[in-house]
Image (cartoon, rainbow, N blue to C red; front, side, top):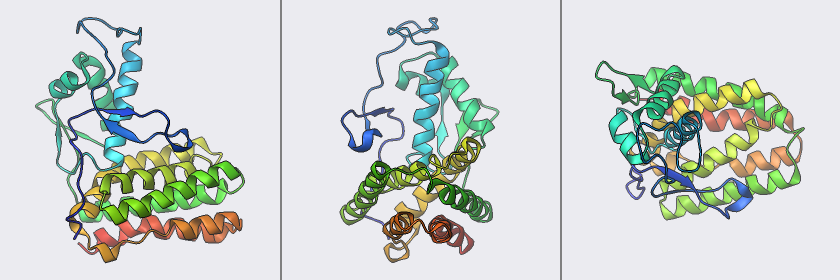
Length: 257
């Protein structure tokens, strides 16, 4: 089991750390950027509008879902999140409603939100759809990935190997996301990219739970080096096949549950 993997506190907001490889930035835990001093204000101390605050909170929470910092059945309180971000309830509520609309969260009558529980059949189906979309995106991305992009992808894959050796689940999942997202965002098809990332946010808590608690270590393998070789060879069919197989690990895993 992945007993050596540890997660971070999902109640602490995320910030992007400067000076990171490839400019994408590892995310660290800490206090949020100084914001609203008066909950009645619609802008923060730097002049950010409520809409911008809502976007920042949405992006933060979405990433927590993607890397599994938020686990299935976790509850998100508007009040607790607002206190953590040091903002009023309004931008938090807007961000949560947006994630609910995308089916990454479920609302409740008590105005709290919850990460959907693991339902094996639903999880398996979701990973299958993700695999299909990401496979198509990867085939398209071959025409758009630059040598610099390939360098970044290699760094992410190497970082996954290092995280695996150290038992650092969060780093493993974060670099896995960076790898996959760089590929589907390079597809040249914004709608395809958006759909792929929405599904990633929905499947993230399940993938995180599987890696941290449910799967045997031998059941996981980093196949991203092979994907890179296929991209460099411009072998479209193989790239698509390998991406689909990589994401379909989740399809097969939850089908066995």
